[in-house]
Length: 379
Ligand SMILES: Cc1cc2nc3c(=O)[nH]c(=O)nc-3n(C[C@H](O)[C@H](O)[C@H](O)COP(=O)(O)OP(=O)(O)OC[C@H]3O[C@@H](n4cnc5c(N)ncnc54)[C@H](O)[C@@H]3O)c2cc1C
Image (tube, rainbow, N blue to C red; front, side, top):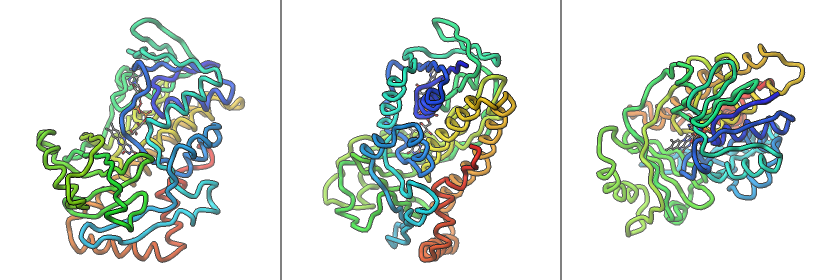
């Protein structure tokens, strides 16, 4: 059995490692000359930690990452609203906490384990086309495999070469992410490691990574980046004011989409991660659900009792999860944080206070936000 994985992002590398651990021969083809170093996804949810445990890399992940046992809801005007404690999931998972670790720190851990397990990862190999038979073309050669896992990101060349539509919508505003060297807890002492802040205009997320705090803010869709960067300090100082300009380590402004491929499979080719589905970052579901795709495919492909139809069924289940869970929850998070109607916003804040105060409701809510509820036993 041979599998070609296209793309060495977190999803492709998780798929490759999961297949290698099951004795499958894997070739990873990555367009870049090295792993991507950009600051992007940064939250690992409990089911993803369980997968990383199964893949044998959890100790590195826990050592390099930051444990986040709680997350909080805040209102921009009123401050702290409610704290949700993942400890309530102690009976549901071995990892009742989130780990904050940027994907640029996760991918070297996965790559190291793949190389140690004898995996073949080739950089500088952009895939240009894929056939449904499992034939993969790069600029320099052709490879053949029993299965191809396409994890080549949102602009997936594989998805395009198969002619699969990427249906959905684009948010009107762009998202600005500023990584800062400020210690936000000095200015806002009641912050959790992850904080969702309600406001009809300047809603935000304040989250901690091992090296920085990050602030995510909505930004108009039609302005110049330079104009947004020049007004950024004023916006940040309206969140917390150190009495001088914030020390900024890194900034990204990007357009955000909610899209799901029309099919996650075409013959012997399976789409995973951003190649298959993209969503807004509110709730940190994108990379996590991509890693769940990777694991579901690896389990189905390597199962000695499984046939092609079982693999197709795994892809169909992952598409249903992307539509019914990931797209729904991430968009709901956006709608709630940015609710414009004061009565509606008040109702959301009151609901979070009530949920946090009731362990039964809090556990039910946490099962959903932590993605445990999106993980049927078979995937
Ligand atoms: C700017 C930005 C900020 C983000 N911030 C957040 C966030 O804060 N929180 C969050 O949850 N999510 C965030 N995301 C989304 C998150 O980063 C993705 O969900 C995650 O990276 C998906 O992983 P992936 O492996 O599927 O794709 P990617 O990480 O995109 O990896 C794809 C890999 O495929 C390679 N590749 C591309 N084309 C080819 C080809 N033709 N042949 C071979 N290789 C190819 C690429 O070089 C890359 O290494 C952000 C995304 C962006 C773009």
